[in-house]
Length: 461
Figure 1 (cartoon, rainbow, N blue to C red):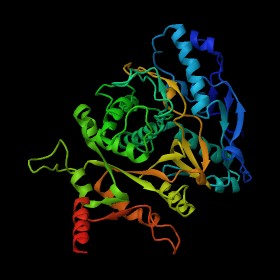
Figure 2 (cartoon, one colour; figure 1 turned 135 degrees about the horizontal axis):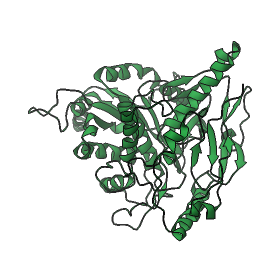
Figure 3 (tube, rainbow, N blue to C red; figure 1 turned 135 degrees about the vertical axis):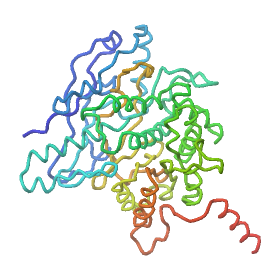
Figure 4 (cartoon, helix red, strand yellow; figure 1 turned 90 degrees about the horizontal axis):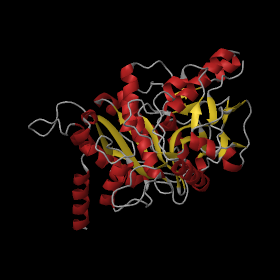
């Protein structure tokens, strides 16, 4: 039995056809699953096939199970002037060539005899292969692809309202780290409101479908308060960390932006009062600061603290090496990807941000924001979803990863938080007796207490 086609390539439309709205049929493609170990070669072992890719990819079908109903339903955006659309298409195509790897179609290679981990979910077909259970093999591979494609994909956009005090209507070339941070936060909100097991290819109830779209709206590229995590609002907050539109944002900068945006998001979207974001300073989680945060907030009592736990999103900016990733931390990262609480990594390769969502053997699975797409009018009730879900599970070697990154975790309840504190401990320290530097630390007390103690120690010397 051949693997049922789940993916299709971008629409093979000429620029003029795209401008007029005409397009030819999709060209099928699939990821490559092999029985033998793959040789490492250029671009981390990816297979390349040249393809016209001026427009974002669309799903064809997960065995033709209403994929179009999920991704393509909705009214089309209002048609723009032909000249404007053609200009944007040409500019977008050039930026894809300049800033990303989307000028070619990539077929990522996956080894059938090694397990795949995707944000705590394990897809392992080795036992089924040994027992000749081909149906189980195909089912597992399809579920992996559906799981990957269900993650919210946020990329460069063009044609959105200009960012305040600038003439910028695109974040191409500078907004990739912000997009990676948005994707991590979006994943946390998906887990919170829809659950980790949510799969967009399953039959969705009306409430689930509405929440799926609502989460995307919170990240829409517009300056309005009903999109509290939009590029516009995050850039506005960026002034507090001495960053502005058009400048490079590092993982720590983006973590701070998400934390500050979360602090006021509940004022505009009451549902978001259920969650809070904690950024660990100095690679250390301070338990008292976390407690104060999760029990504080707008729904607090007269004492200043609410009576119930707010779901917690933890972001830990770290540096796992000097100029390149220290390989001693690779086992630690692999261990984190197996944890239920893990949200992935905001990071990338030097000068090229990526959102790391999983791994297989010695390669990371990534969502890449370096693809320029037109802004979407999310004010429509059924706005099109296809540009918010990626069908390309790209991979890069662990050794290509930049050492500066940020780790994400989600704890729905106090019990989940306690479990996280216990389960994460074995993966903080590299498995080497010679190395004593953990990826990050967890300590009692608050950062202020630690600062005061440090100051006292310095004064007594």
